[in-house]
Image 1 (tube, rainbow, N blue to C red):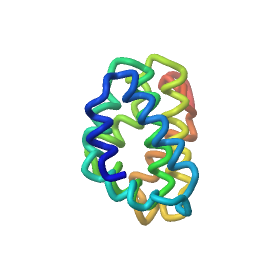
Image 2 (cartoon, one colour):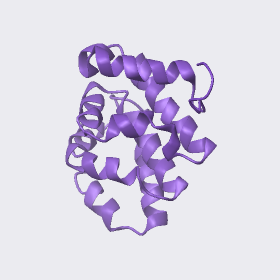
Image 3 (tube, rainbow, N blue to C red):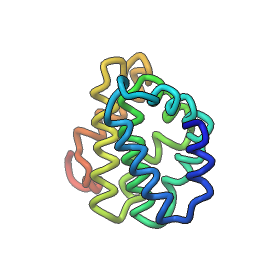
Image 4 (cartoon, rainbow, N blue to C red):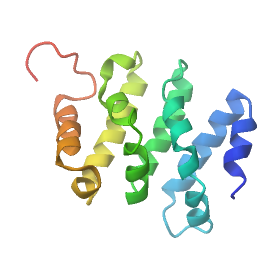
Length: 148
């Protein structure tokens, strides 16, 4: 399993999307799955690249990465890794970066799962958690016009 991240990097775009989607589905199985712990240990060095890929112009690529983020934030270590990236929270909270309904809904799902994590306040701090809760309160499609 340790060779999966370099393998994924060497794939063309379509295969990379399939690999990332499969990884997200594998993570949904839960901590009891054989090999999941080993796989999770190989993730940290790739988090900066994951956050960078969230800026890709193709919605399919962003959707695959957002699905993976949604699975990562189910874990203490995943929240820690993602939110340690300076650009992740501003990206997550910025609705203007997304032109597709799918990406907006996926970003919202990442925020929902993050805020619902039992240790969210300890992992994020009160200020960042408040920002996420304000984002959730206004919904995935709020344009900033009128009252929220």
